[in-house]
Image (tube, rainbow, N blue to C red; front, side, top):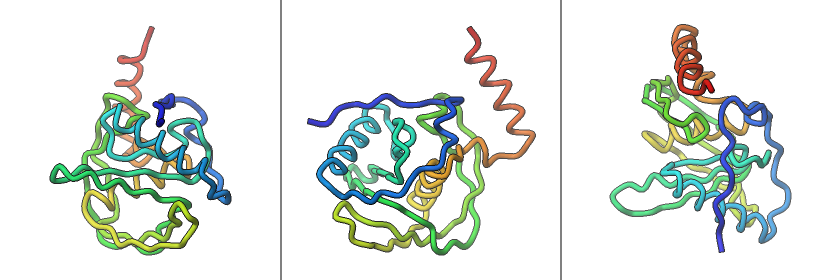
Length: 167
């Protein structure tokens, strides 16, 4: 039975750590991804990286929930091998609750990853999937979406955070 895991939020230092490659493709990995999906759904997210639940492993789950079809995707050890074009999108993050900002990303990407059995896969992604994959892969590298915005916007974010999180 999948369980909801604790979400780590900004400014927790764990979110700045670089995740380690997954080498064990046992049933515990499937159980962890089930827990990650449950956590993501409970928090109304469309993507979640393992560091966001305190696990420094290169694991990403995504479900864009488009057209009322749930198409859950699991990416183990994902890496962007090609990227082109440019786009912007207003992003939010379960680890930075309540804050949204426009982020510049690559428009089209190719990602190499492993599935739950450890088999290598390649996916070409565009649109929301490309944006979501870049956002989640950033998490694996200790990067939050607020690290991708201009210095001016970072200043606004810091003021917003201080105002909304002061005791």
